[in-house]
Length: 322
Ligand SMILES: [Zn+2]
Image 1 (cartoon, rainbow, N blue to C red):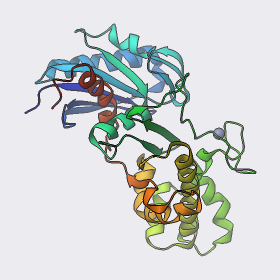
Image 2 (cartoon, helix red, strand yellow):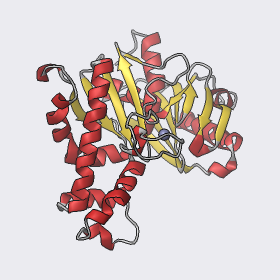
Image 3 (tube, rainbow, N blue to C red):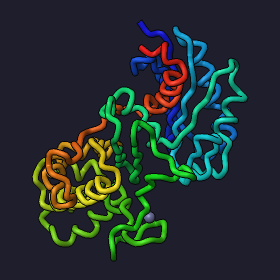
Image 4 (tube, rainbow, N blue to C red):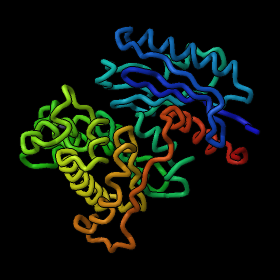
């Protein structure tokens, strides 16, 4: 029997996911809305607040908070979204906009979507009872978050662990951000498509050559059939993920590196064992102290968002946790 719950809201470029999540991490109600980026932030925030009000009204248990995950540069303390490129949002007062339209006084927490997922992994997933871990979320782009001594690292400007656009690879692929060799151009769906274009001429026999339009899903299916072009791309992902993992190990010395995101989860069975095995090439840590590389367990991004509010409630009311 649930004791209390929080509403989680994950704002994506195409859809907004809502979930009412109880203290055990179980989803009691869920819904989705199309984002309609063209509506602009004000109207989108009004739609979010209306759905949050409806969830609070329908909840069978007290609602202790509303957690909102948003892509981009999000300040959790001020509640402002400084920049969310895919939403075309600049300096949007997200927390205030939702809070002032709620029918009941309920605290609202906002954070970057990947940091919200890291909270979710910490409470209910592969980061549970783990003090130091890093989450790598591979989707269209590369997002990441680090938990150090049980706390999500934010930095002075809420920009810590924004590793996707660090130009770590010399003479690497040109990124839309203007730099060369950003990790985002290697460890993401965008990176996978760039790899397809690069390697395609060398594998005329690949089954992918027959497709008019290739997606990451096609490439992963072809990996399972040992298609040579897909295998070349898989090996490239193994190399760069091992490289990034070794680099993260040197900075944070985490006990786990969690691979999530839609692409990360789909790729994981194809690459994780090799990355783990080859990690010694990129770190001096003895094998028994190297991080375990595992798959994310919190698949629903709205659960991550709800965790922002649930974690806060559990911290502020330590006698209440389940
Ligand atoms: Zn870049």
